[in-house]
Image (cartoon, rainbow, N blue to C red; front, side, top):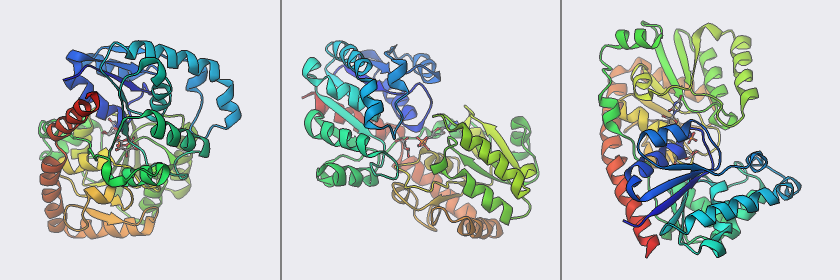
Length: 384
Ligand code: UDP
Ligand code: GLC
């Protein structure tokens, strides 16, 4: 196994970071992780034995996804400092593995300095719905000029890369995230009342759970609209605004009050024990209004052996097969989501059948073992 320097822009715990956590822990003997900002992700990496170094620059960190060209120019000196620091460090490793877009920019720009093979794990759907024009152009040219290998988290992400760069989508390896099924086995989900009591949730109501960071495109507002249409159901929102979406979080509270459903919504905030929270639910919802690149939370809901209702776009349709291992609905459609919930709620046998198939598919198609095996293979190829 070659030695690897992993780079990730975030100190927060998003899906891309959870994917890197497993990989960096697996490769800890011959690797190190550079984070471009500090946060709880660092402690999680270190707890698993990974060596971590933070190379941050406050002004660069402030450049947001839809930054203008002028804003980008202001932070050029800071960018060069970070590019040089990453490159100096990368020279000690065989391969540079970039896990996010800002990591891609800073790591790939330094290629003339470090001259190491660059591999990028692309976690995003690279379209204007998700990103600014300037950012997409930068990504396009860096991929063409300075990246040796790209791997993607879904075919949907690969198609967006192909449309942006002209690379043949079929030539890009799709490596799905792996979900640790054992973490779900450790939770006793049979005694629902005891589990809910431990988590401080109401014991005897029908509970829908929506997991994920609070962000407009994750569509928590759609779930609130749906809740207002359905009686006798409670909704648990597990997750926090990780990347500055505090205004959206406040708007959700206001929306719940305005709809008169505040007493049936539980804002749980960020939770570490997602397996227990998922097993405490009757159904798991996924409500992204833009195409989801992959959606770890969907596979986690499946691994929890719960019926999952998901928004049919992006990588989601590669995970969920309608009426087979879950239920697909039109993204952004609160009525369709409500109808789907009603269907599964009124037909517990169907819900159980979907959940059983989902449980089996999560283990066979999205195992951590397969993810690590394919990822280390890709890193090995990049090093050659
Ligand atoms: N997650 C978590 N605690 C929370 C909410 C989410 O640990 O309170 C985890 C969740 O289990 C999943 C990840 O955050 O593994 C989110 O990844 P996903 O791919 O679904 O979405 P992303 O945030 O990367 O777009
Ligand atoms: C990104 C995507 C998410 C995906 C995760 C892991 O954060 O938004 O859909 O599951 O990366 O690949």
